[in-house]
Length: 98
Length: 312
Image 1 (cartoon, chains in turn yellow, green):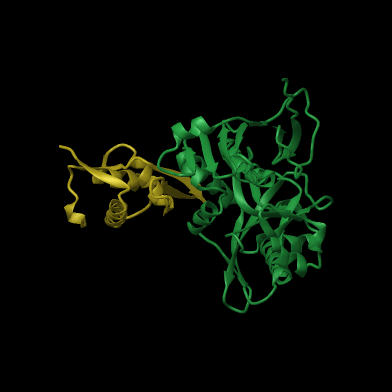
Image 2 (cartoon, each protein chain N blue to C red):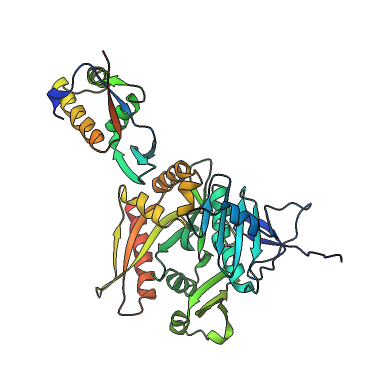
């Protein structure tokens, strides 16, 4: 999935069965079924929390822009990369909503 | 006919164990007002086993209990973190029975009580505890023994119970005053094997009682050293970092296959995260070609010294 494939109707949410904790101030996560650990980092942890309930790409970016001093383009790019990684690992899923 | 069952109270892993099976490895205690933490009793579990046993030939693990059967030894049931029922097989060997009660059963009890058991030896250095973990035969007990010969104290030589206090500091609870050493290690340390009791079936491993050098106090855990064998000639130490630390702590959790099926993976994850936040983890490579226990002792002490200086 590339950046332009994400549409306004797509909502992202966490796949259940993953639990988060804190390691040296960064968000770390465990997939209980696979026994696999992930380091989401500080910003990744924020994004992860926002996906507890389905959220659109647009809403994610605007929320982050209001909290962090970052360029909109750069922010969107980083969020896209991060979401793609999570999708690849089956940690989040996409819901189509209109 | 009236049968009288005599039960004795012992202290192990910071808990009072009331047992009808004699556990001579453990120090006895006086029970206060008849209060104990764990009850060890004999009970026929053959019917329970035949109805419960599923696809696994040895273990039944769920959120309610852990049930396991060791052929020709016994069936064991561990419940609520406070009860061990033992159903001995005919002509079972008492030494074998105790090995499982003090090992796998107590490991299950600790996990059910949400006390994290690491598999290894724990030594006290300057009021802090360092855990030496590693696979079977990695040299954990031998290294611990080298520390004892240098007048450091031992908190555990097999199962290291860890709790996290209100300040999120991991605390090690002393296990019981005994070491298990291979014949080869006894020889290296100039100890005579005929002075010690061989451990059931393992004619080359011996139980060595520790008295004055047993640390009876709970102390904070400050570091974990993972011992691995190497074909190389030199001893080597390197920090374990990032997520690798979670795998190290999971791999060296005693009887870690109990955790998921007991529904305790979230607890284990959160507990190891807290341990990681307060401790340093290192991997130590031990050459197979020679006896390195004292070399490793020096290496660990030097590393801890350097760490301390770096923080000043």
